[in-house]
Amino acid sequence: MPVHASLLILKPSLATTFLRSSLSSALVPFPLIRLRPFPNPRNLSFLSSAASSPTHSLVSSSGDNVGGGRSGAISPPPIEDSVQKIDVNPPRGTRDFPPEDMRLRNWLFNHFREVSRSFGFEEVDFPVLESEALFIRKAGEEIRDQLYCFEDRGNRRVALRPELTPSLARLVIQKGKSVSLPLKWFAVGQCWRYERMTRGRRREHYQWNMDIIGVPEVMAEAELISSIVTFFKRVGITASDVGFKVSSRKVLQEVLRCYSIPENLFGKVCVIIDKMEKIPIDEITKELKSLGMSEEAIKDLLQVLSIKSLTKLEEILGAAGEAVADLKQLFSLAEKFGYSEWIQFDASVVRGLAYYTGIVFEGFDREGKLRAICGGGRYDHLLSTFGGDDVPACGFGFGDAVIIELLKEKGLLPELSLQVENIVCALDHYLQGAAAAVATRLREKGQSVDLVLESKPLKWVFKRAARTNAQRLILVGNSEWQRGMVSVKILSSGEQYEIKLDELE
Image (cartoon, rainbow, N blue to C red; front, side, top):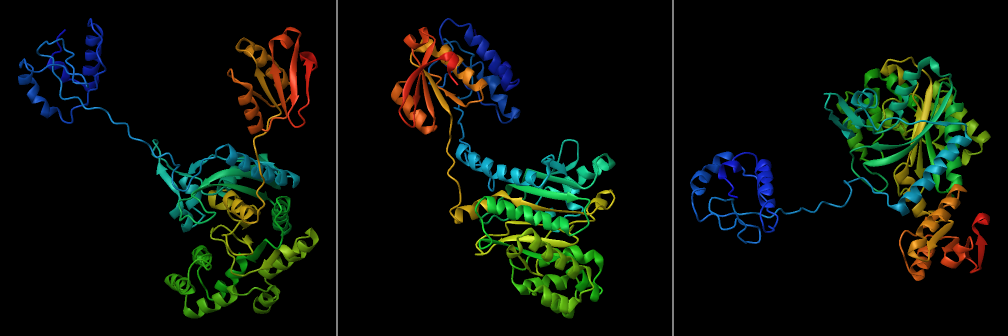
């Protein structure tokens, strides 16, 4: 059957369909033909003249004439499609979790959850995708620059959440009076920030948050720090490994108030001060000047921020201010909770997020090899920025990446291997259904079972049992099965016996 050139001027997909249907009706088998779409229809003018030429025929990719020698069947020289290999690495700053890493992640998250529940907290979660405005309204410029944000198909500005606290605030406002205060909620969620990567800092990470909504007293912050200390103790971290730097945003507010610095600059000043350990002090001074602060104000501010003693702070600010009173109460409560050796005063701690209003704290590696392990504080006015009523609140965020690095540094990472209780194997192919029945029986009793799904030699089965750390090997053989029994081998001791299927536990 001749293939007319005029059909090829239509869509490449239509031409391909026509050619395939034409070739399928031929009397001899033809190899698959690959057609590449023409880049520009205007370049197809040669077809009208070429179609009448007897020298053109349909040619396969192998060079064979597949048009039966008929003239008028033409195509351009075929070009083989090249399959491009994809990059098998995850996007920069993100991670895969193969089984061995997933076991470690689950181990860590289980500690997060168990500590939270032991303190009477309930678990919540939020969408990974949120409104962009939720994060840029009060979080500050640092977050704005790090957002993974875009416009969706409904022309809405959305972002992957960089942290969990604004989502928590949104949910609290949504619930309104249907929930009774105080709320003690925790979450373990994935967060995204486009930032420069360092050890323990990724663009995608998981974060453990604990938040208390509705408690104005410092007792709430003391409870939160206690929960983190409890976690550290559970995984083997001591006060000689990790400490907490504690301060209050009110310290900074009192200093700025002395120099009549406008309230609307407070958040920007906090973001700059939060960089003190990351960039030279000259750069800090330059950025503060760009906000309109005088040299005298900057000098006094930096002097206060260098204070590491609560007694010294009280000498400068006086005992009557809220900042000093709150901090003294926190250190007193730390003694009652039993973690006073874990915390120290450091006026330079302000936290980079603009919504903090009172006490702030950071967990740090005492050897100074890692960035902040965790951080949090009080944010009494966050809800009102989203249209809700002001409710006293505080909380913390604890990333998964830094703590893993710290545990690795201290040699405290657990060895977590795959472990199943039973491996079940049929000794003959026709007994695979019987082996499946044995596996099902054990699974219904709550036991883990690795069922061998193919006919494999016993040598392979024993290797599999060793790799999965199986406790028992259960063999389904013909003679035993005829008697309603199976063979059981205890792999740790080598003990072997037969047992009735009804008695298998």
